[in-house]
Length: 194
Image (cartoon, rainbow, N blue to C red; front, top):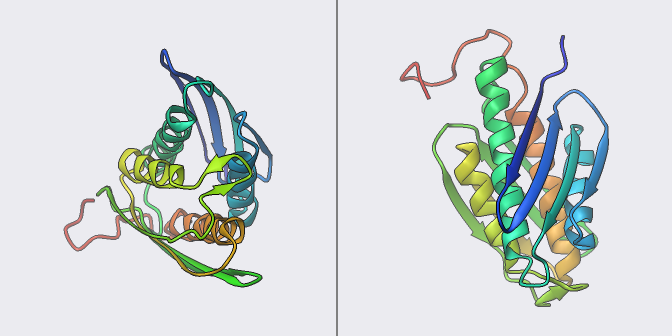
């Protein structure tokens, strides 16, 4: 099987992002200028067993919001391009991952319909210098641009880092499952179209 890949670039007055997604690769290199965010994206790709290269710059001196949100947009666009270029996928994926005291869950439907349910109450507002509410911006952009229905939940935990990391690992595994090529090559919808 050929390696499925998609590359997306986004340049605005606020951000410059160059992202490559390779579904059958293990090449991971993430550099956004936000170490915690790099760690989360790398963990997602590693446990989802897909390659991810991200080179991103943004107006971090203003607020990391633009960079985090735009990275979600670009990753979502790449996931959508995988389906558009290479055809139908299994569509549904689900994973529950523990990390020490934390347990997080991710469910993905690559349905073409954008929807996000995100339930997380982080006990610490920051992990390092990363403001945890920014994760909602990332997931919202990812769902919207990718045409994904995402249900993401940090079920419990006492350490915000552990809760978020378990969630990104679960999301990676759920993406891996939902983006597995459908072996019969048909669109998995009773409508016949997504």
